[in-house]
Image (cartoon, rainbow, N blue to C red; front, side, top):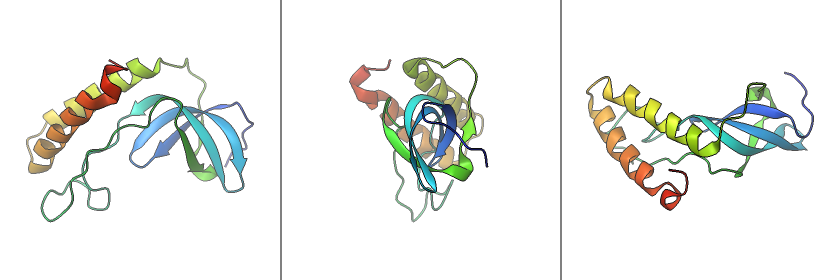
Length: 130
């Protein structure tokens, strides 16, 4: 586990998404991170029963918002040194990549996830990001 300093750019997972953020506070075993960009869009559906559609509550999952703050275990934080992408462009790219992944195979889960992703995409902050 690396030690980081306040203000460092980091890559962090949260739920099933991956984000680029700025470390803003050390909270003992966690860091508080401010989200700056989206690398991987969260999976749709029930995180406790991934890729299942029967007998589960199928959630629509949005990516964390720009500047939203999230607590992340120190053990999963990685350094990020590449150029910082624009939040809106990174969100759009993450959605497109996830959509392509879902469209590559026709399964009941992928069909439901595509429906949920479309709803999430249409609602993204009332068109603020794209």
